[in-house]
Length: 189
Image 1: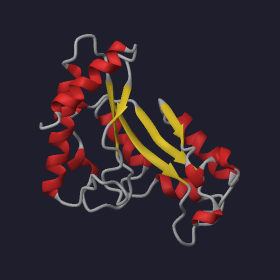
Image 2: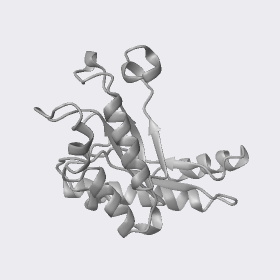
Image 3: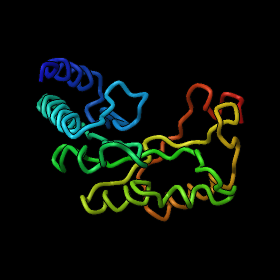
Image 4: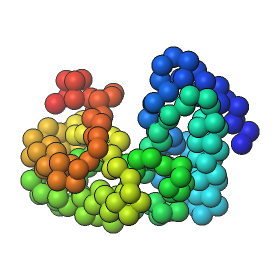
């Protein structure tokens, strides 16, 4: 709660600048090592949930705010299961995960999306979790991985399968990752 005032100020600024209906992605990918808010234990999971609840309460208390909050966990094997990181239905408006073409060893081309969707805590799990909590499902970040970053590079089959899966599961939004060396518009594909 030490930063509640800062989040109130952020909420006031967003409302004042016509962004009262913003969708906010807080503490994304808490099970991914690059994130400074990495969660690796039940105690840290409890702190993560409490932080999330404080931020949501502070921002929703701003007069005129109609913010929606998107909860995003990268999925896949992690030290803490996604269920331990869930801030509660009253604090989450959209459930999200990520989907990057990072194949498991030995996965043949043409089957990468289908295999990735069904891994434990993978996209299929998040679709079911979102439905159980009556929340829209979002893919917060998705994309291809260039060969320079150890990925398979340009793969139209992966894209077609992913987009077909997203349509079949009524995904509310799928945000294409277009940043840095993985940017589709950056020339690596």
